[in-house]
Image (cartoon, rainbow over all chains, first blue to last red; front, side, top):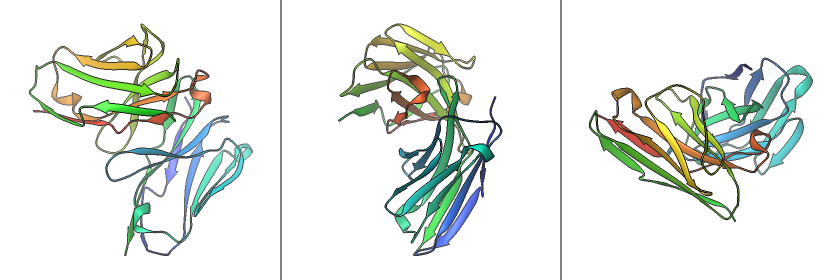
Length: 108
Length: 114
């Protein structure tokens, strides 16, 4: 199956800083999604982005399908951005194949 | 708008006891439904998915089973819990196109087996 690798595994930022999270996948994908899991466990959809760039407020994502990676940008980070960020590909049948996530802590 | 509910939110059960977790979806018809487990260490693993009433596919062999008695109801069960069944169980739904569309997750159930 397709391997999904995320980096960095852990990240600590001071409030107001910017960050870039990366997701590499081992083969071409047509379905790439980013999620945020808040400290209470709720998984929130951020982007469905098989290719190109999308922006939603302080978050944006870019997927370069030909080079098999996706990036999630967080600008002017806030403490509420803390949690775990997952990318997932959905080309392996019905399952979403998740990476192991990047754990983000934003400090005041 | 669509909403997805799970209950209970938290459950502590002794080893060998039965389990029943329920998931219901509102605001959509004929959804695909999924059960995932998230063990400590963050990874999510698909346990079961269903494309219709009574249609269940299992992704991994295990101590658990799933049923879909109604279009928007998905139940995860076990006859006898094991310690290794502890984890965070997430239900999700998607449109009929399956994984091609976005999956939306419920709030989850934290299960601790002692």
